[in-house]
Length: 232
Image (cartoon, rainbow, N blue to C red; front, side, top):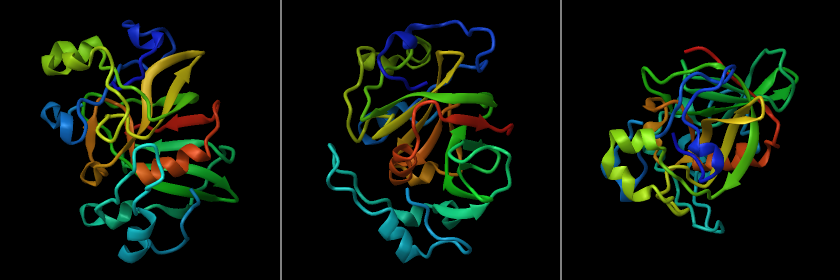
């Protein structure tokens, strides 16, 4: 999976009660494209936003540490545009619910509403489900490929010491790290600037949101927020 360079990333054996499968994104944008992708304020209610509205919501973010370009919304199915929807659940406001079958992430807002984001999810053989929580957060994190990934894709070895933050870093601008029982699971919610991946199974278990959506979710998600990943 993709993970920041910390002691947790050195763990190699699943621990009882943890999400059973390790995961990592096996790619990123342009500069490491050779590796490939194997591995807010809520917007409106009712009908999905128009393309013109989407171009504004997914426009450039110039004042970030690394200025974020606009999303090419022509590459994004409109059903994955961010929107407010009705969502009945017993989970408390603030809870994040991942629906990998339908490629959505929900932030529960209360009163039967949720902010819904389009997402990419784990590909076949790397999907998982269960409850976790946000153990920590990071802005523009370092990415270090796990040794399992390097074994499968030797070309990733050049990043064994960590890939510096930036637009081409697979973790992107923001990352929410998922924990269980006080330990990092090696699963994350991360940001991607590749709209063509939304609505697809492309990773080894991590959940990706468009950078503009992840900025929104990240800003409203404190550490210890509950995360529920539904069965695919």
